[in-house]
Length: 332
Image (cartoon, rainbow, N blue to C red; front, side):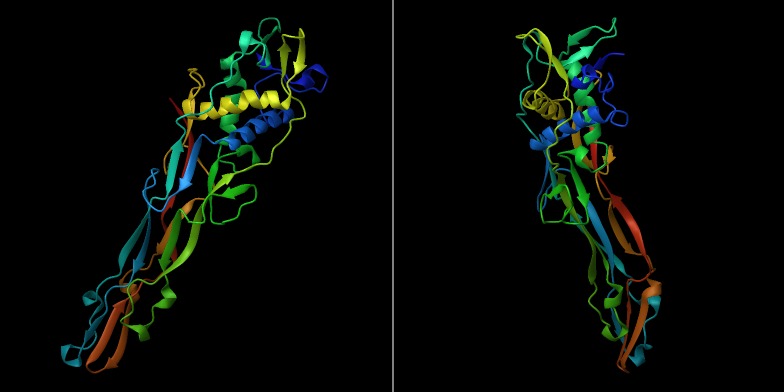
């Protein structure tokens, strides 16, 4: 199998000669983490928070509110029955606060004059070495790096990716906006009392605020770097960090927008709400009180000319819907 070379392969460090698989090779993993860091410096597919009209779509918070109260006299029969007391009802608040922006001018792809700048690759033919072309770079570096940053695990490896949290402060990430992208509310059952009939119908309480964050990892320096053929010196040399960054930073930043142009690795990075892909961070739960309207039927006697009833939100919390921020690698 063809594989790429690290400087350690030439010095007895024992690292592998295959496509980077972080579970098996920490040195290769360090290189991929560097590429993830480079993407975080210029996230060419970015998310922002707006007050309304976000292009990722609309998600709804649904809660219950009390029905309207009734008042009858003793001559009218006293308390209205549950059947004749207006039911609790639902009230919705829509949130369309996330906007995705795909760069219209991502960095240009790096060039490799005479194929002497990109890393060396070991071919399947008698272990020969040759300089990679752009397709090789996509296969051995960009495709696996993009898969790692998009896999749904929010850590330093997912540099530059966006995720959801109920906290407005997440270690290793930067808060995009102090404005929540979703607010889960429920009826505040404790706010409704018999003595308060007729109560204000809508008396909500906030259960959770959900915020958008961006992973901003610290820079890492791999212990070993890929090697390349130095045309000027006619020998094999280890890439400097700046040389590596100049090649693979623009490459992943461009590929996230445009794909690779290679049929086997031609995927672009995109976000969505409640669609395909990996869940980025916390699931946004829309919860409500699950009791029936009849169970919330309540009476209040004021006087013989004022028998009041009202039905209140009640019951145990339940989930009405779960909303997720997804990241996907979509074939172009």
